[in-house]
Amino acid sequence: MINRAVFFIGLLLLPLMGVAQQGINFEHISLEEAMVQAEKQNKLVFIDFYTDWCAPCKMMANGVFKETVVGEEYNKNFINIKINAEKEGVQAAKKYGINAYPTMMFINRDGDVMYKKVGSANLDGVLRMSKEALMSLKSGASLDELDKEYSNKRNDEAFLKLYIDKKIKSGDKPYAAIEDYLKVQKSMKPNTSDMLDFFLDNASCLLVGGKAEQILNENYDAFMEICTRPEERVVKQFKERMRVNTRTAALEEKNPEYMRLFITEWKKSYPDSDAKNDALTNYELEYLFLSKDNEAYKALASRYLDSLVSAKTIEQLRASDQVLYEEYMKVHGNDYSLTGMSSQAKMLQGKEALSQIKTISRIGIAYLNMPDNKKADYKKIMKWIDYGMQLVPEDTTIPIFKGSVLYKQGKVKEAIALKEDILSKMKPNDMGRTALETQIANMKKGSKK
Image 1 (cartoon, rainbow, N blue to C red):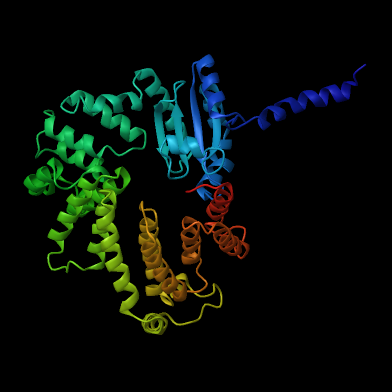
Image 2: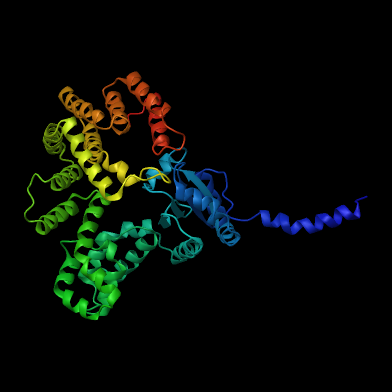
């Protein structure tokens, strides 16, 4: 016989037990298994792509994803899974082009992307994602399907409008589609508030060298007359914003034509710049890399890095950094008793040195990954590395790069030993630790990446 008091207490605990079942129920199944369930239940699969080192990912996992209202919405409508993009989800992340975290994605039972959001979201944003994803499902056309139609419908105003809206809602930037739309659309006159609103709404997607720039140049005064005071600043910055967008688009889409448009516009804005200017040289290197002109890239990279390492001795470079540091300290003082030395002061102790480390690593890695490198190429790279390792001895960027060079040369044991030594000196929460662990694991497995 059940004790009445125990039975009564059990009844009281039932609501509390229900409360524990809150938030999104992320199922511990593979992507393939989730798609099978999606087909059986006629649902979308919600994927949270994350990494171990991603702080916003952890905030969402411990915050908004545990909200009851979010759980009710997502558990009802989706098959929910989490994928670590640097562990079991490497192939899935590669397939869907995931390179920023968190990335949240909704796919249908065929694996087509119905909606995508890059970056963290608050409660309203997470609930809005659900509504937009379900709307995409009801509309019948996935983003993947529209992508396939795009090349044949670049003159279709109605299609382009739908396509742009779908791309934006999915977290993508429809650079080319907006250019196409502005060329064919008949619903907005160039000098009207409707066109201004379109420009303001899509400010991050407008490029130089095309229809958007033409409309802005021809109607700038008209825009300034009809815009509000807060909008004036945005309109004044349109040209600079469009130039930055064009370089961003070139790098995101690996499009050398966009990079050439950016360089052309950059030269117009800085007509007195020497062709050997650091910024312009780096832009030209980006263009050659995107164009896959490997020999031209290697030639320019060699000239640039050779001049960099020969311009100043290590002592001269440290002396100039010391001058910057001392000037800063004269203005700001050195009383950091409560917080320790400021990050700005620390950076100025080796500003130029750290900048050169970053440059040698960035350009050197691209050079290293060029096909058909010969002994002379590796000799060049090691010369840059030898210089870079003296700049800030405690910085691990160049030593890690050196490990990759050794591995590429077939010196596997030496490469692994070097990177493991670096890893042993890192703290558990140090940035880059997870990536270094992955590199070492791949080396041991024989990966060529």
